[in-house]
Image 1: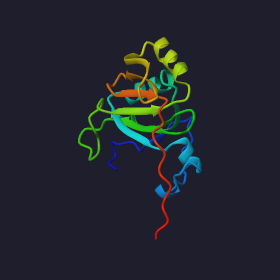
Image 2: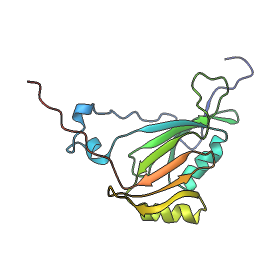
Image 3: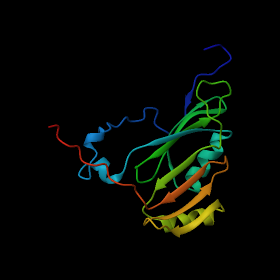
Image 4: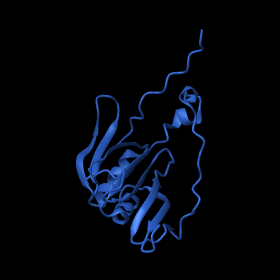
Length: 172
């Protein structure tokens, strides 16, 4: 690191050592397993032009919980936010021009499974979020809506949790 760069700093109110849960293998994901019954743990990752503002939006409007934030000077180097039910989350940071992995901000599309869809919809409407698809029932049994965040990412929220992973067959 050259003398002009500051080392990444841990956000003062967030633990500096995030836990690393053990993930089951695909053959262990059945309706009987905790991960199989509550859905996958998946972190969508993306970059933002103003990560600090996006973090505020995700917490205030969409109800995410900030679990880690590492700053590098004025820039958010890495942040993790989880759904309140713990079933998924996102990782993000400020865009870094010229970095090996720094996708264009605003190009993500995400689907988030939620149990209390009506309550969340009321929240986003009350916060004047940009609703792009109003709350409605779908032909496949879900109740869903979609919003666009200030960076341009599209977020779809619904009750459809996907199909269960089939139980692994015994080798013959």
